[in-house]
Image (cartoon, rainbow, N blue to C red; front, side, top):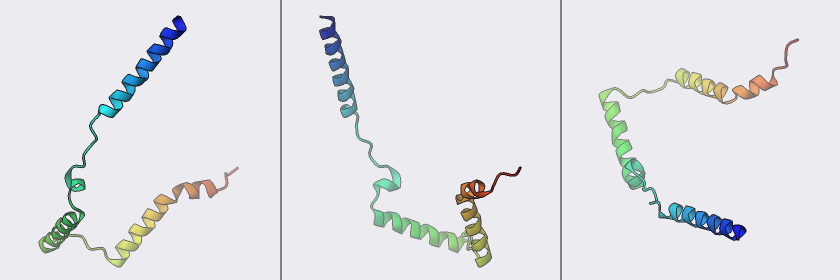
Length: 89
């Protein structure tokens, strides 16, 4: 009889957990995620043009781009460099 009660309780807990999970409302996308991709692209295009007209857009020179790329590569592969250096005695 105790075993039957324990089984019933665990079954009830499982059912209540499942009903809680299924009754939760699915999350809806908000902001740009809810918009049509073409509209988002058009807004970004307008923003880029406005920034260039205002003179606040940054344009990388070749040297700046080279430095930024090297810095990103070093950060990405930092673990490899550390693990490949032999320990000093």
